[in-house]
Length: 223
Image 1 (cartoon, helix red, strand yellow):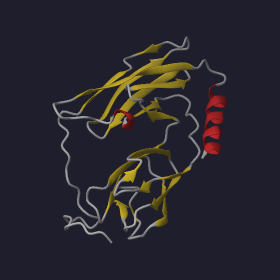
Image 2: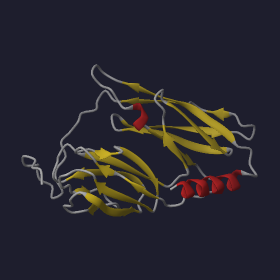
Image 3: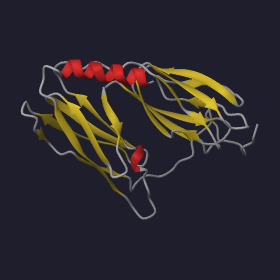
Image 4: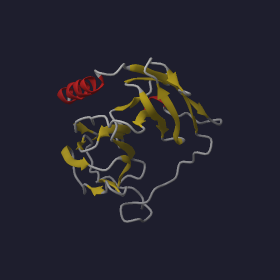
C-alpha cells in the first residue's frame, strides 16, 4: 500500500511540476441540532478539476475493511477507481457483507472468521455496504476518480496542493450528505472562492435499510 501512495505522489508531482502549485486549505463546519454529533474525521473532502487538462488518477490500490465486534472498520473509506478491498472477518461469528449500490453491486455471501473475501470497485461514487445478518452493521466506500481527496482532521481542517485552475470543492459526511462550491486557483497561487464548507445535518434521520433481497430484517442471529 505504501508503494501505491508513493507512486501516486510521484505522478501528481510530475504532472504539476511545470505549473505553480498552490495550497487550497480550509475547514469543514456543521450545522447541527441538539443531540447530533457528526464524526468530523469521517468527513471526506475532495477537488474535481473543471475543464482544462485532466490530471492523472491515483493508481488502484489494495486495502482492507474488516468486520470486528459486529462493526465494519473503517466505517468510511475512500479508494481510487479500480481498487480492491479485502473484507476479513475478525469475529467468531459469520457475516454477509453486500451492497446494492448501482455500478458497485456485490454480495460476499455468508463467511466465517478468517481472511475474508475481496471485491473490486470500478464505478466512481459512494457505495453503501451492509451486513445481511446484522442490520446495525454498515460502512460507506467512496470510489474516487480525482487525485485530490482526503479526510478532515478532528478540527475540520483540510489541505491540498494543486496546480492553477478551476475546481469544484466538495465535502461529504454521513450526517448531512454533500456540500460543494466552486473555487479558482490563480497562477499566483491565490485562491478565489470560499474554502469554508458547512454541512447541514439538521435534517439527518437514521433510517433502517433493507436486507439484500429488499426485505425487512428478521431478529438478528449469530451464526
